[in-house]
Amino acid sequence: MRQSRPLLGILLMLVAMVLVPILDIFAKLLSAEYSVLQVTWARFLFHTLWLILLLSVLGRKWWKLPKNPGQQFMRSMMLTFTTLTFFMSIADNPIPTALALLFVSPLVVAMIAPMWLGESFDWRRLFAVIIGFIGVLVVLQPTSAAFKPSLLWALVAGFGYAFYLMATRKLSRGGESSLATLLHTAAGGLLVLTPMMIPSWTLPTMQGWFMMAAMGFFAASGHFLIIKACEYASASQLSPFNYFEIVAATLLSYVLFDFWPDLLVWTGLLIIALSGLYITLREVQENKT
Image 1 (cartoon, one colour):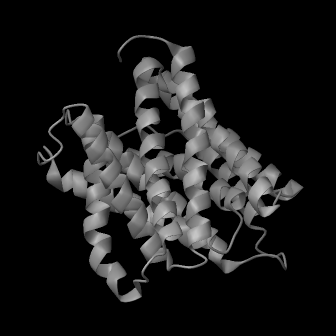
Image 2 (cartoon, rainbow, N blue to C red):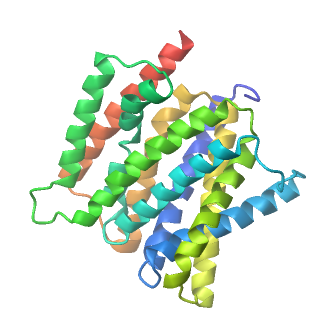
Image 3 (cartoon, rainbow, N blue to C red):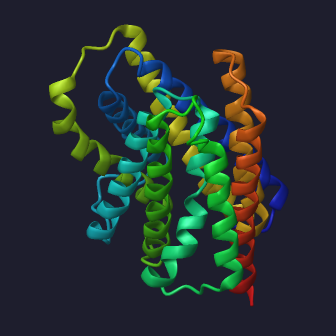
């Protein structure tokens, strides 16, 4: 940590949580004209290009191979899988509803990290996980006539993001630069998605290219600001503000798509958020101890 400046760290996190939903907005708009696979590919293409530009400006050797290529590639695949499945969900569903299901990731981490990373697990975490998944059912409303099976892709993305977080924790012990890791993650996704995307390729219009470039810009900028926020504030200070993303996503969805979540979605989101926040803060407290 560079120095303890929590207010600056929180401000950077809040800005990042505004930028990330803009990425999702562009993805949803692009999905109306291009395949989800091509939209996901474009997100990683321009994410990679913007990061190369940033690292070049900073005088970093972006072309160097990672220290742990196997772990880097696995982390990249987790984020690629998460992005693809989340984009599949928001193509047919409101972004705030899908995002609420993505927030199950801390609950999944709490269950799997003890086996994978040797972290602790107790009855309090188990209780929080159970309560959190009750919130998932509230958001999904599986017995409702409004239920769409495609919304389940957001839940799948939440599981994928949990594995991405655990891969990040494991990789953080290897001493790799955060920005270099971010570049390797984007480049890995681009490498794998390119041959998969070719059969569904549609030549983008100038507007399409602009939106794809903007999507990559907001992806790279959001992740960069999260990294910078972590340099000035601790995890316990920043964790509550991760959920500001749902506020930004909801406001943007209301302005652009005239969508506002109903009471059940808000209730389910609150249950999921409080459960995940409890698990996160308890983990931070144990680490301090």
